[in-house]
Image (cartoon, rainbow over all chains, first blue to last red; front, top):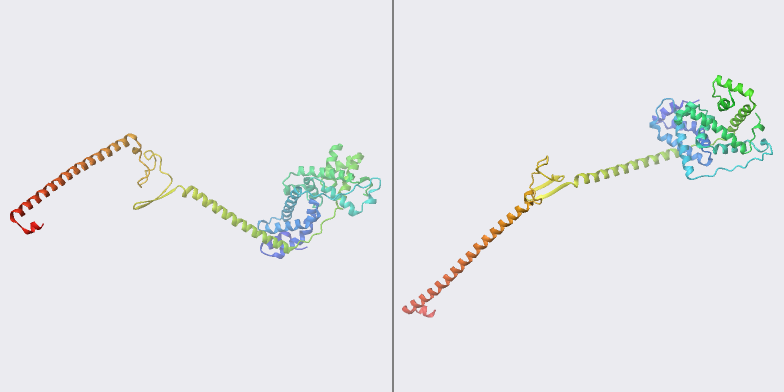
Length: 186
Length: 207
């Protein structure tokens, strides 16, 4: 367990570039995972991850220590993902096509973990961006609704409603792709 | 609790977001309702499925971050320089339009006149006094009156006519004097001939 993020930020603001590198190494994987789950386009993730840390570098002087480094970084990641999503809408990229599983055969017989992960990723990718965002923040980043409300500027009640809608849509789409909840091991 | 209320709370139950009281109420409904219980199991399995989504494996290149930051900083500085130049140019153009175009610079005998803004339309009613410089090109309001102009033209005509009469009188007098000179010259020649004839002067004979 190294120094806290706030301590690294303070040292970096004083000119310690090693502190910045330590922050990057601490957060790069988490940022990359978050971006991938928000955008679901693997080939853009390294560039977008670079972009996030470039923005972090440029925003160094604007950071004010109040113990909120993680939400501050999340905000940068969300803005980067939204910008990338808008660019992608202008230049649409076809999502990876996944053939439906033959419903006559049990899901376990066809879905190895990797393949199942690809199907779930596609189902997540097909969610509207607002639903996908709240699903990713709640499920993968384990943020509660009040934290998400502060981060996104959206009321917590709205976020709860979106989260429920995201789970239900996801369930429906996964069943369309051949997933059968009755056959899944608990 | 009915099925609709229970299903609204199922995501919260699956993710542990409910209070103990809410969770107890939903659990009680699920024990009595097989359909809602099935729905809860399905959502729990969706939560498990989400864990199968692979993450990304990324290693940020620090050199690229520093290089891109430097390039963007340079671009930012260039942008500000261009903005500063543009604003300065616009300000200069505005100054020319507002100030320089309305400034009159005129060279008059023994003085240089620099004046900003147009003269007031009516100096008699204007709040500011008329400029000290004498306006040669701009006619005074009195001169614009036709009667005054006609009067001055008449005066100039009479003046010219008087001068013409004086010239004619002088020409007459000059003609009279020339005639007298001719008469006196002839008389003088006749007198010389008479004197020469009486005295027999050779000089006069020779002449």
